[in-house]
Amino acid sequence: MTTIIEKIIGDLSEKKRWREYKARVKAMPAPYRATTEAVERYLMYFGGITKGDVLVQMLEDLADLFDGAVVDRTPIRAIVGEDPVEFVETFLENYDDSRWISKERRRLTEAVDRAVKEQS
Image (tube, rainbow, N blue to C red):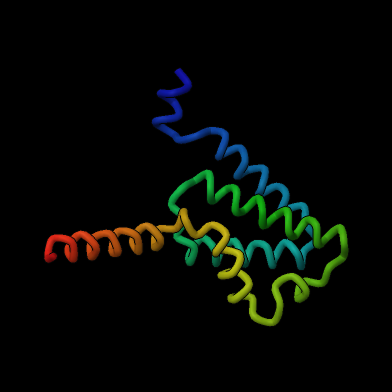
C-alpha cells in the first residue's frame, strides 16, 4: 500500500526531511535564518537539482553549515564571504551531478561523440 501512495504523492521520507529542514531554519537567529533562506531561494532558482533526495540533502547540509555557525558565533560574512553568489555557486558544485544542466551537458557531449563516430 505504501508503494501506491508514494507513487501518487512522492517519497514521504523526503517530505519529512524537508519539513525538518524548514523547522531548523525557522529556529535560527534572524540574521542566520534570513541568510539561509536567501541561499535556499537562490539554490532553488539557479541550482536546477533534478533529484529530490539530493535537493533535500543539499539543504540539510546548508542547515548544518549555518547551525554550526550559530553555535560557533561565526559572522555571516565569514561563511559567505564578500561575494554571496560565488559562495552559493561553489557550494552547489558539490551537487553538480544531480543538476539539470549537468545532464544536458552529458547529453550534448554524447550526441556529438556519436555523430563524430558515425562520420568516421
